[in-house]
Amino acid sequence: MRTYLDFEKPMAELEKKLEEMKVLAKNNNVDVSDAILLLENNITKLRKEIFENLTSWQRVQLSRHPDRPYTLDYIEHICDEFIELHGDRQVRDDPAVIGGWANVNGQSFMLIGQQKGRNTKQRQYRNFGMPNPEGYRKALRLMKMAEKFNKPIVTLIDTPGAFPGMEAEERGQGEAIARNLKEMFMLKVPVICIIIGEGASGGALGLAIGDKVLMLENTWYSVISPENCSAILWRSWDYKEQAAEAMKITAKDMKQNKLIDGIVREPLGGAHLDHTWMANELKEVILENIANLNKIEPQKRIDDRIEKFCSMGVVIEP
Image (cartoon, rainbow, N blue to C red; front, side, top):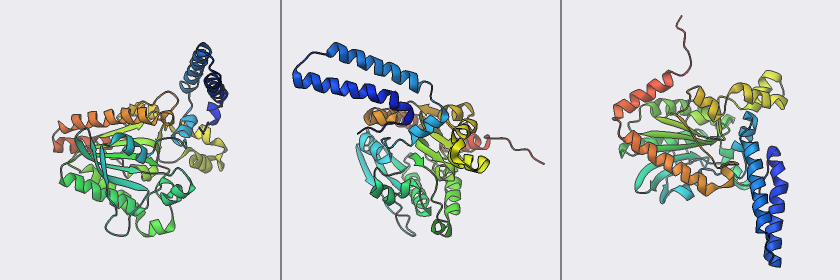
């Protein structure tokens, strides 16, 4: 059963009628192709009207859609071969972070991504996509391995934030993320970072220092979620929509503010409607960027990477 968000519900009734009409035509051997075509055109027109005028909060909702493709879905659709690697070699393996060697059209690279779950059991196992320190240390270990073998790195980011539990802090959550930031600046191989869902706080940034930082069309990227921003400023979650607009967290806003390098388009209605289409689009983007970055000398890539992030924001010396 497809899940409809509140602003998608005007389409729900039309799509239900379309399915009923198709079943009726099939069961009774009746030709209603003209009526079906008309209804499909009406659905497409309504979908365009809705999705061409989305608010920031509606895009946040889309980024969290339960049917949206996650890292494992992209691995399944994109990779000709994927060998998952486990463990940080210190404490344990963190299921919230998936990493390993990927092969796509003969191009091999290290693919690292954050993974949420589809059902309650999976969400608990993946810790709702919130990595512990071991997840970031595993990611860094794999990045260093990719650098050793001179292979590009691709990270897929989708997290509501790094896990804030006491045990995570005791094991050095802040230090693990900070070390990733430092080390990713100095990686000699191409690094491509793509926000595929939620990009919240340091939990996202710990995997997002790259030569190219991209966002899917209906994703968000910010130091804090709209709900938590609302809770801090208004002491209530009721103002999350206003917070989302004010924070400028959508892909379009981030591109205008020169905080990301590009936007990856999604199918009309969102990535959750067509996983295969979205995966093919992402596949082309990854291969194209790897090819372009491979033409640049390693030291030039490092210098450009540092310059890009250092130019963000304004610093006034005393």
